[in-house]
Image: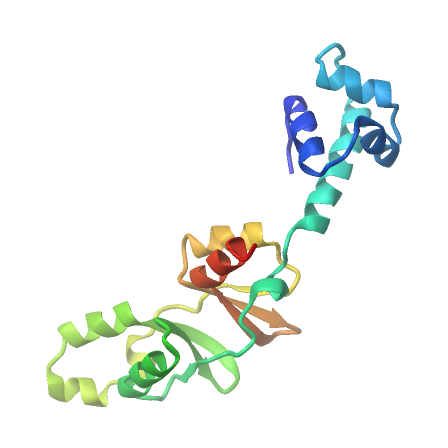
Length: 186
């Protein structure tokens, strides 16, 4: 992450570190930290890089990962299932979107909105014959279990769900609701 020199003090305090503790971790002097924070010195690149590396390490260590917030019970539909099957699963589990699988591979996404759009554009008889693969959208993003919540949050601004995989196999799902529950847990 790219920081500004002015941010060092704020970030240091957020992690509950004294100038001495930060200096020790970054292998620089405490007086250098004090001078940087008070804007009395223009430090060298290498010294600043050491400090920023420590701040990054602390940030990454303290940040939750995908495996910490994902819902492990993966509810999905098969591409060959009919629309009614998806609707029933959504109602039963009180969710609004489902990943679509075809032989253990994620191939798409179906949501309440997608289903409503397909219903409004078709006659009742035709809807009964439509399968999920006829209406599904592209596959949602898939991340590793170690992906930071910052990245997941950015993805959830563009997609309704993010799948979490380990060794290529889906292990969980993260929704906006999961993110909010994590934020307001404490």
